[in-house]
Length: 113
Length: 114
Image (tube, rainbow over all chains, first blue to last red; front, side, top):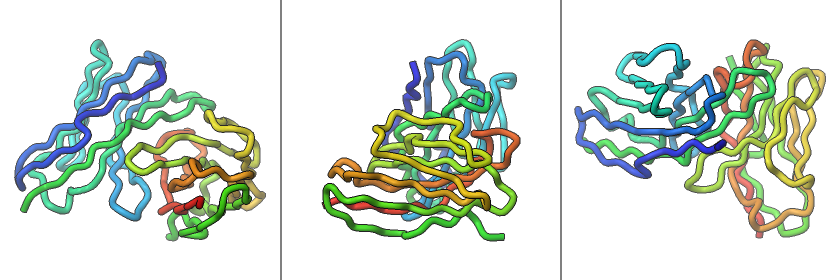
């Protein structure tokens, strides 16, 4: 019940394409859903996050779509660039001070030039 | 402004040894948390500290311990190292307003246990 299942494990997209990464969760107590981007040799960096009171959030070329009834959320990257090649992690957490954050296993994204 | 800094960046130990990893949070951040990231996996929560008090612990054995100092820096200690402890250890800091909101990660300490 504490897992966050992420797919696909890896993804290759042509430059300009729209990669989509999906995550699913079970715990209905989760109410904070961030996405992190990690480059080799670096720690994860927060990309965008959503709360379950909205179904979509856009920040630049990055969009989160959220489906509360299905307990699923996804990351879309518009006009993808080779510099977007990285590993992406979804995560979920409650917003109480003692809640733990759970990360998905990651998606390795490669954008072809 | 400096980000989250971790030291050392790389470490090689042998089984049974003890290791101490260090983390300095972003200035003004009072919450520090530690994560273990095994190759090919997402970060796994180990500990969270706020104002020098442990506020959360993940599913890790008692060989793992941590503490936070008055200047909000933190140490992660691992005793009796096992081969399976080989991983990237990440530290993150966050503003006090929300524990898991806006986590800022350091680049980690790569621990290899031989």
